[in-house]
Image 1 (cartoon, rainbow, N blue to C red):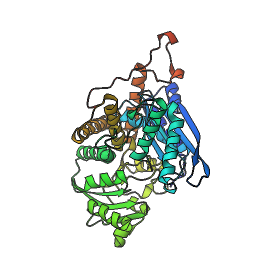
Image 2 (cartoon, helix red, strand yellow):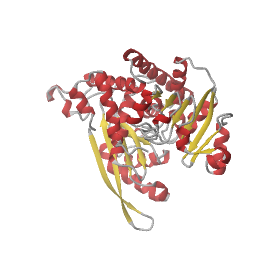
Image 3 (cartoon, one colour):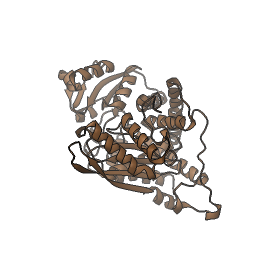
Image 4 (cartoon, one colour):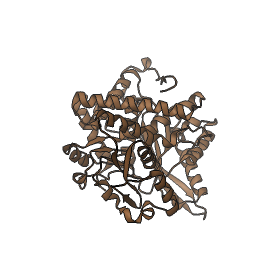
Length: 439
């Protein structure tokens, strides 16, 4: 994996889009830095009685469109540059999919697998308590990310509610269904990516079956692989953290692969005669490559070996800036993460909206609204791609920046003192007007 600073890599893309749209330099300077950075040292009392100090982070990047929004990840390699990059991407992603959220991200520098359930709960509640003054349904709305889930969100919501003295389900999304969570959330990221890919295939007049390699078999990779295999695509390679499997001739029944993995523990053990490495999977001769695992897996070292015609970025930042440049030269069509995997945050918005308005939508309703959002966002990115003769990533960034600029004209950021152009007596607090029902 490339060692390039992920935040610097993200800002390269911002600068490229800013140049294409001749963005005012003063606005670019504001967008190049996060609005607020929070660093925490959290005491964790282990079951043994030992005290351990855990480093925590929350980056609130931009809130011109609405409350900061983004996940909390628990991982030993979480660091500030990674969190800043992810918070920036959330700002762009929320603008691309046109939901009234800004961008944020956070995490704890810990491997949760080394903790007991009681230790994990104590740590989560401590994190919620420390973050409470800086989060809230109309300020900053965290969500699950790497190694976090609905249970962790429920603990966070409960602790935050204790701090503020009232039940506040909308402080986080990704909660369990029945505890304020939305139906359709688990499948949403994969399903959103599927809707986008279907639109691209139609625009390019491609004929199925199209061969697909999916790197990553977690929630996102599994759901999109399953959807693709059941809708006319031939999934010929899959992988998990222990390695991959490939069958270019016959492909895989994804539901069967899922069942086999549960039984054997890994895809490689399920299909021992078809083993390949995760690196080899990326370089297979397929129509569509779906990196749905880690950041930076396609970089200057391997981008020249990529044979896929289309890359659908379902992970956050799976291609480095240098890798992106090589893929552009090879004229490989890359559907960027800020569009491709925005289905998750779109349904997070639906969850937040339902909580705020005390509504409960059916799964059919959620999926229908999700499809409308994804199809609409793709159409706008495609339009800019054609009009300005830029690749899809640059087109998505141009769309996002334009939405941020438009919102700045109408709604002043909640903590936007540096941007405040009116005098204090004329300044009015923003109101985030939500469209009815589907948005």
